[in-house]
Amino acid sequence: MWLVVTAMWVYSKGNSIQKIKGNRKGIGYRSIPKDTKWTNKILDLQPGHCFYLSSDGIFDQIGGPKQRGFGKKKFMKLLENIQTVPMKKQGEEIYAHLLAYQGQGKRRDDVSAIGFKI
Image (cartoon, rainbow, N blue to C red; front, side):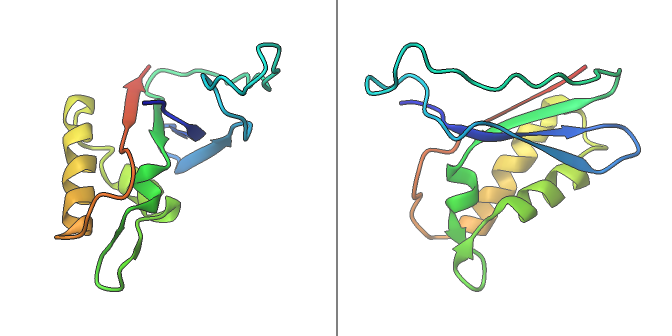
């Protein structure tokens, strides 16, 4: 299984979530040339910054009353809402929200996320 990350989200204290776009290139597949170049992003790290990476499976998960994808906006809003929760518990919160949204529907794709705080 490979994790495909399309973006990174950064929360800086007192601000909203900022999306940092990545390159739309695969990683780890045999068909990807070994000399593939990716864009470097330089960030000003400050104490309290939280970083999140996730697979696209979270956004693509169908659910809710209208049976639509969870989406990036809903994910970003969720990240904003859990900032008062200790980092150790945030993963549980994300997973619980995704399960509630999914309801009895089938899981469509892999669901992976990682977060860390400076």
